[in-house]
Each structure stands twice: as C-alpha cells, then as structure tokens.
Image (tube, rainbow, N blue to C red; front, side):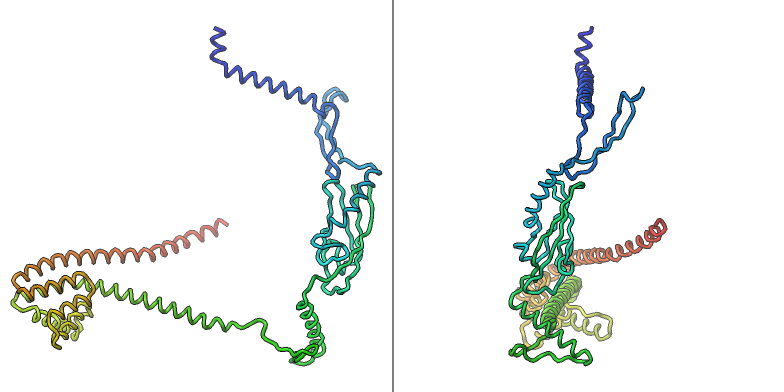
Length: 408
C-alpha cells in the first residue's frame, strides 16, 4: 500500500523534497556568507556609504537588530598622492574637447568633474572668467587674434586628501575664413559710423572701403518671386476648376438626356402611329418644346435642344438621315445612337415595323429611366450623410463639454 501511495504521489514528494533542499541550501549559504562571518564590504573609491541591516546575537539575552553604515573605500595618503600625480598628467588630454591643444583653444573645453576609474573628483575655477568660465565655456566674443592667456585652477580630491594645481592655456577666437574676417572688420566700421551719427535720422553707408567700391543689396531679399509662382499655381487651379466644372456639366447633361429618352421615344411612337412621317413627327416635337419654353412651362432640356439643331439642319438642306445620325453623335449616349440608327434604317426600308420597334425601345427606356432615378436618389442620400454626421458631432460636443467641465 505504501508503494502504491508513493507511486501515485511521486510529483508531490519531489516538490516537498525540493522545497526542503532549497531551504537547507539557503540556511547554509546565510551562515557562510561574509556578513554572517562578520565581514562587511565597502563601496569602491569615490562611491557612497553602504547600510547593512543586521541581527546581532550575544550582546543581550535576545538578538538585537542593528543598522551599520559603512563608508566607501579610501586611499592611503601615499596612494592618493600617486593617483593625483597620474591624473594631473592626463588632464590636458582629457579636457581638450574639440581643440588641438591647450595652447590653441578655440572652442569649449570638456572639464571633467569625476574620474570613474579612480573615484576622484575635480573642482575647476577660472582666473579669467571673462574669457573662459569655470565650466569650460568660451564666454568672450572679442578675443584678440594673437590669443588670450587663461589660467585654470583645479583641485583633485578623493574626499579626504586633495591636491591643487594650475593649467595654463591660450584662447583664440574661433577659426574664421578671410571672408568672415573681412565681414567682421567692416561690421566694426559700421558700428563706429553708427556711434558717430546717433543724432542724425539717417545714416549713409560708406561708398568705398579700403579703396574698393561698395555696393549694397537688401540682405533680407524680396519675396516678389512668389508672385509669378502664385500666378502659375492659380492658373493650374483655375484650369482644374474649369475641367471639374466641365465634367460636372457633361455629367448633368448625360443624366438629363437619359431622363428624357423615354419621353422622346414615346412621342415619336405616338406621332408616327398617328400617320406622320419621322420628319413631321420630329418637327412637331420641336415646335411643342419651343412653345413650352416661350410660355415658361418647360425648362431647358438637352435632348430637345439637340433635336432643334437637327431640325434646323434639315431645313437648311441637309438630308434627314444625316441630320438624325448627327443628332445621335452629338448626344454621345448609346440609347440615342441606337434610336438614330433605328430611324435611319426604317427610313430606308419603310415604316412598316417602326411602331413595334419604338414600343420595345420605349419599354426599355422607361426601365432604364427608373434605374437612373433610383441611382440619383441613392447619391443624394449619400451626400446627406455628411451634414448628418456634422450635426451629430455638434450634438456630442454640446453634451460632453458641460459634463467634462462639471467633472473638472
């Protein structure tokens, strides 16, 4: 039974055993670590103090908790002196920054304040802060081209011992090209003239300098060159606007032509069915349209306008078939081209089946007109979504802003 229990509980036994084993190793490690053996480790040179929380037994009947603060490692006096001497030898190369040497300083120095490898700190002080400050920044803009001597005082300390020293360096103005130097000299001349003519409203710039004639231009430059660029941009925009408007006009014209197609076919079917020829039917339709336009009962419709043009062509002597074919081409829509071909074909072969053909065409035209009207309604509904969303956004702002202000 014990074997059966062990077989079923192998995992549990392993877990319990591992727990006791780790506990034993931890206790053994704690008893044999440096603190348990009474050995505390300091932080390195230039480091911070370390605090140890200990439980001390033997000084009382009960173990007492103690907090022991241990200072960082310190150099012996001779050792500190050697470290300081080594650092003084390295200082000129450590603080150069982008300069070539301490006798040719033209940019800011990199005054190191902590040497991580030794833990020694450096304190800097400039004896000529009007030229170079204690942070190594070149502060003067009027430095003699022959160089300005500067003395830097440095103090090295490890917290106990210290050593002072000085570094001599020469600061020169930043490198300038001949053009820069000529501009600086001329600028000084302008400053001198400005000081002499402070009582006058206008100052006349010199016409020559060092024997050479001087010409002046507005250094800020003019922005007039933007005008032709603006003109080109506007021309492109207007061209694009005209193309867009032309496209919208063509689209609207095509929509009106499609909407009128069923009506045109229906009238042709009625008039030809009443015994009129295609030409007479065409003429009657145009006259009715123009009469309605004069009375103001009809709007401008592209289909009937194109029919009026075709009627004028017929009256000017152009053959009826050719005028009707040109009517279909000007409409630029497949239904009208089909209608003009149908009329031309029946004009050549007779009007025997014209009524039936027009009736079939009218049925298709009304179906197409219904689809067109439905599509236009869907497009109008889509366009209405934008103002609806804007109204929703306004309502949300009206509701949320007072609520947020009340919470804040």
